[in-house]
Length: 188
Ligand SMILES: Cc1cc2nc3c(=O)[nH]c(=O)nc-3n(C[C@H](O)[C@H](O)[C@H](O)COP(=O)(O)O)c2cc1C
Image (cartoon, rainbow, N blue to C red; front, side, top):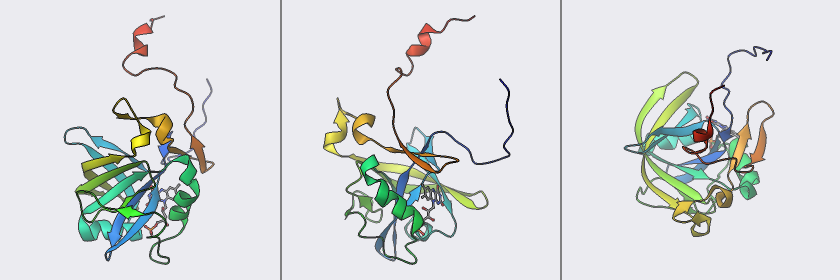
């Protein structure tokens, strides 16, 4: 298949749209983040790429804690708002109802079906953004989003963010089971 080169860009498909929360001067602040992923299994860690200038980053520096909140597709407006407006200019503390878990300085957005509490493990300054690696201290999931003891992606209904068109998407259909469908692979 013919290919086009499109230049070095921070491209990844799919990207999530999550809300990173921190307390800045004691007030909860949430920002939209698409550059987020899993960093480690044992101990469990997440990582998020945060621009130095973000108000949320001030709170991460201040407390050494933050949260990653996974919104549902029904919260796309609130999520985008938190990605367009800085807490440095406008108070975003009332966009979500905040609660606290184990970490008393990592604000958790109650309306989001999944909330992950993180303690900063390490920060890697990559240039424009700091890759903040957080050790997960606790995970909260809305009861109605669980199936057989696990968070259920179809119930959580997370938002997918797409590179290029800056679109918000919903999760599509299940196409197979991991560590399983590969068994039917046949070498040509
Ligand atoms: C969908 C979306 C994804 C974003 N992803 C990131 C990201 O991964 N890292 C980042 O530093 N900023 C990202 N932003 C920009 C911040 O969310 C935005 O600058 C926000 O206003 C920062 O808020 P704060 O200054 O209150 O922290 C994203 C914005 C949107 C709309």
